[in-house]
Length: 435
Image 1 (cartoon, rainbow, N blue to C red):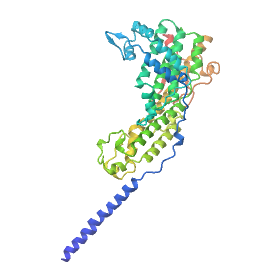
Image 2: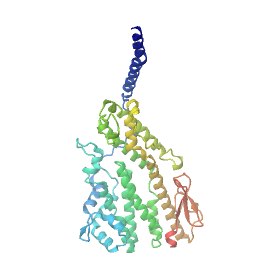
Image 3: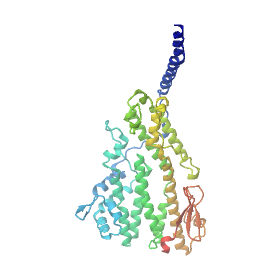
Image 4: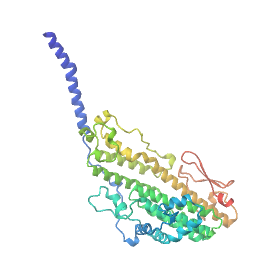
């Protein structure tokens, strides 16, 4: 009897009591980790509140009209809805390009009018049933059912420019190149979402490509080159626009998190791989305020870094292996919130920096190219250094955005050099002219 009592005491002391103690500790950890923090101060990430503007001053008004005015030709008995893709695949079909240009004159006029507007303003939906009203303004209220509609309308301009150059109408080609650049700047300088910033970024890229070709075209006169230079030399830096795009994206995901109302299952993400998906433990692993603070701190660090040369930037790489195991899911603090933020948002940190630096390099390269060609036309020789171009042709020698030093120039072969992201970049200023 006494031995049985001893065995029971041993079982109680060495099994039941430790299990109970561990369970109490686990419950306390879960309880502590299930408590969210107070709402963080996010005022520094707020975008300016823009006042509505009259429709006739709003570029969006004319972009919608441009979309609605598009004429799709019949090709091989079929209406070609993906017109820009078809034209890219058939760049030498000059008859088709001429036909498309003639049939879409209204589109080009609306794009020109939109490019002359002072702002691109997207009204926010007042529909109480909208889950994400910040997006609905662009997707439904504005009339654009897809962001590709705008790209397809503006995407006709490069083909019009090609047609104009084939006809020798250089002034018209420059007009449409500046329209491309202005359209892109309107979108990237007032981004409602990161998607709209990307559209502006891509449209402006098309304009820079066209301007680069014009700068090296021997048919372009000094007067016309100076007209290009006047615009290109005043292209605003990308730092503030990328910062605004980051804030716009933060606002979008903040709204998404608020609409989830603390329920992880309401967020877009692949939760099926997790145990406890429908349990209280799983829901406790999402802290909306803590998640917002995590996202806000990340965005603040991005914005602080964005003005630095690429070589000095902390790239904020996140591990792709961000799915927590069962232990972390139960005992971790805001595990689900952090994983959600990384998955949907923050693996693209490097993309923000690359967008900014790549485009700054394209602009610096274009400024230098135009200035060199004007210099050569006026003096009869190529510049020996880029300093020769200042201040008559350039306000200052453009900086290499990858390391923050002035662009390198080799007069022996007429090339511009940059240190680049991973390897040096070389660009030939005179390539097309010498060919």
